[in-house]
Amino acid sequence: MKSITLLLLSMVLIVGCSKNRSEDKQVSQTAVEADNSGRNVRDRNDQTKTPEDQSENEADRTITQNIRQVITADDSLSTNAKNVKIITNDGTVTLRGPVKSEKEKAEIEAKAKQVAGVKRVDNQLEIAS
Image (cartoon, rainbow, N blue to C red; front, top):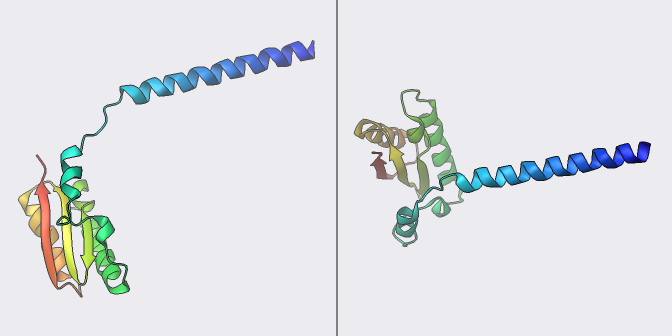
């Protein structure tokens, strides 16, 4: 009797687990995938700075960290603004990503210029539509 009960319980668990996996697949297949193809193609050229271009020397990493801290501490900035890409190489900071307004774009650039060690800021931030 115990063997039959254990067998039935095992079958219920297996069927239940299989059903959940198929439901998960349906959810993931119906979700809309992001299409950043145009931006990805643009970013493949050698002219566009990406996070992979971040210098590994301590001074550049510190500049990037300090800019990120200043930006994330400002509660007036949008979530997009707080998540912009900051790439520092030999003291030159490249800012990339979407922001809410021209005002945010200017504020982030100003904050980056105030950080010690920054020689130049290349502001490539885009106004999100």
